[in-house]
Structure formats: structure tokens, C-alpha cells
Image (cartoon, rainbow, N blue to C red; front, side):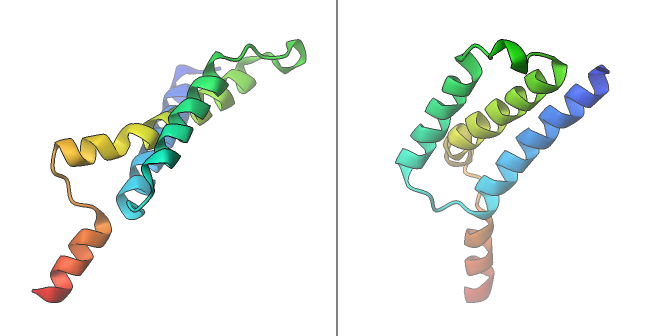
Amino acid sequence: MPGSIVFLVYAAALLFAVWLDYCFPRVHWYWRVVAVGLAFTIGLTPPSPRFTGPEFDLAIGAAFTLLFVWGICEMFFRLFHIPHHSQQHVASRHA
């Protein structure tokens, strides 16, 4: 499998996770913990022998990336004081 395909799939998973957190920020903290736990569960569970191959590895890697990045993304929004989409929309309505 070409490296560019792998890069594009992982980049799409990362960008989709950041977009989800940007547009839908109001999620309870425990859903984030569940997402990170599920990501590690998916990533560390050995695959069945019949599910081996590069396509399966790519799908598992993309699922891990999506869940893990979405789970920790809120921390970076708060750390760098990046406003969410809904906060900008509300601020522009009241200005």
C-alpha cells in the first residue's frame, strides 16, 4: 500500500476529529475518557488471524487516530484558548 494513501487516511481521521470537536464542543468529560479508552482498546487488541493485512491495519489505525484525537482535542482547545465554533457564533450575534 502506498505511503501517500496511509498519510491521507490518517490525516483525514485527524482533521475529522478536530472538526467534530470544533463544531460540537459540548460533550461531557466522561465521553472523552471513554473515547481514549476505546482507542487504546482497539489499538492494543491483537487482531484475529483472518483479519490481517494492510487494509485492516489502516482501518484500525484510522479508528484509533479518530477516537484518540477527539478524546484529547478539548484539552488543546482550552490550553491554547482556541474558541469553538458555537462560541464565535454567539459572540457575533451579541456584538
